[in-house]
Length: 311
Image (cartoon, rainbow, N blue to C red):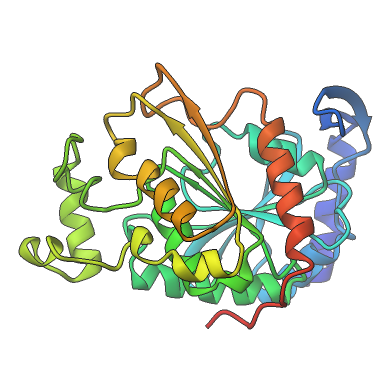
């Protein structure tokens, strides 16, 4: 059966099996209201058509909170694309770094706003140069399928390392960064070289990924906290969610240092501190503040210089 025939059959089945779904949309006044959405069949979306053209086989389609998620392998790497029902003007998107599906309320809220949500696996690379290069290549794919040149990066926990390091290499290719109880120094986590508990197993994998020894790690100066100048110069806004009782990724060794250094450089910053909470929970029960940050960052980014292609 040809790819065209397979697509016709697949979308016929989708139309037969999916009715309307109730979704929540964030209003301008930050309240949520329930409304009926049309069928989630989306075969006509340009991003889907263009993605199919880039792949040797059709992606697997699964449900993501009432939206169609496409799972596919690209250059041997697991990737995901979730499409909104009605794409917003400019085809904005959230690029999530790690822990797909965990505390998804921000991702779902952005889908309701017409954004795409995308994932490219960089597990066990801890934001090293190989991870940055993998994201460079995936960014190229994102542009070939028609996504906006300036995604909003979402870095939860260890995902903070890759979003910060990739953005520092490509500051003109992002609209903003949302980091959530995020790792900013690998020596803090997984290294456990400060007050945090660390992870011996993950630290061994991290040293291997960075191709460095334990002794070499002492003087490393190539982490997110060492790469902020280009981001500040490009006026890339950062939203930091910080649980103050976090003993896994201690704020004093990670997010609080990010806040202080970025503010010293004059970079635009929003910080949300929560008392009495440890490393979990991530995200916000009501994601409206994050939605507002993302949409404002996207609008502002459209007035900044256009990005060069990440390479």
